[in-house]
Image 1 (cartoon, rainbow, N blue to C red):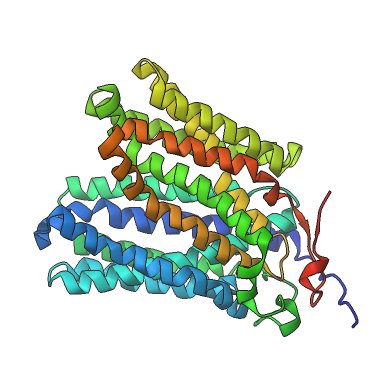
Image 2 (cartoon, rainbow, N blue to C red):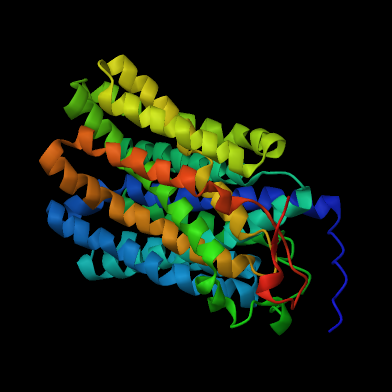
Amino acid sequence: MTVPSAPAAPPPAAVRAATAATYAAFFGSGFAFASWAARIPQVRDRLDLDPAALGLVLLAIAAGSLLALPLSGPVVTRIGSARTVQAMAALLAVGVTTAAVGSHVGVVPVVIGLFLLGFANGAWDVAMNVQGTVVERHLGRSIMSRFHAGWSMGTVTGALIGAGMVALHVPVAAHLTTVAVVVGVLVPAFARRFVADHDQAGPAAEGDQPRGGAWAAWREPRTLLVGVFVLAFAFAEGVGNDWISVAAIDGHGVPAAVGTLAFAAFLTAMTVGRWFGPGLLDRYGRVPVVRLLSLVGIAGVALFVFGPSPAYAFAGTLLWGVGTALGFPVGMSAGGDDPHRAAARVSVIASIGYCAFLAGPPIIGFLGRHVTVLRALAVVAVLLGMAALISASVRPLDPTPAGAPDEEITVAR
């Protein structure tokens, strides 16, 4: 078999345009999701849902995402990350509009809309992470965590605008339909600037895929291990998002405003860590940095849970946020080391990792009933310890030539 020559790199201008477009995709995803989340209370009131019923309605988002994540690998492999983001941005716009307008009709259209939103968000997430790994590879430096920081900035922007819409009494349908139109038009326009995922234009050639097709990534030990690594960090991030303010208020006895500030400190520390993390990754490498940050996160959780005063807990939230900042994006980068297998591997890693966002709230809630929510958060430190132990799994790989057997993949020194 003749091994194809290495593909010509796209011109610098194209890479810069793709970088900006990838930021736009991450920002738009976070903006759209947070815009919906900001209006959940108004939708709940209009439909007269109790907490249990609301939880079941919101479960439609998780159901859509869980279906999309494993399917997105083969889809991105076949049509590319650009077309996938374009299609999913349009589908998400339909889902958001259906949920917003449907809230004036009843629960069924809202559930349908949220399922579409979750499905689109899951596939969009995999596709933009694949493009992020492509851009990172062409730039020759770590930048994935900054894309994830862009997602965080999108959520903050969406939440702030949502709060303004609530304060101005703008109807849910008008607000979210406008968001849907903006996202559904602008994000696909930006995605046209994505660079090719690999050297083949259009659908991937048969030789570009691992043996057994895109689904073969589910049988790769290293890919599964990276998925578990991402799951640990996703659990730490998701639990922080869901429970820090509650634990600060109930466990440390601080006022509600201070508990909210603790949560804000966590988000700020994580966003700052993601923005400035690439310099550390480029200088010291993935494994030493994520291993050290795992320990920082463990120290932060310990301070928050066992600190003798709110001041210690507040410091703990900062360390917790910094410690969890790079785990998820580094796992995505590890999945994209080989451009010919990036879509399938990122899909598998994301599918495993996102299980943490679903399992985190009920696990902490169950443990909290027995040992208090504050003490239950100690389980986060255990998972971060596990991540530190398996952090070698994210060491960069030397990509195989197109069509080469999987066994020829070697670990980069």
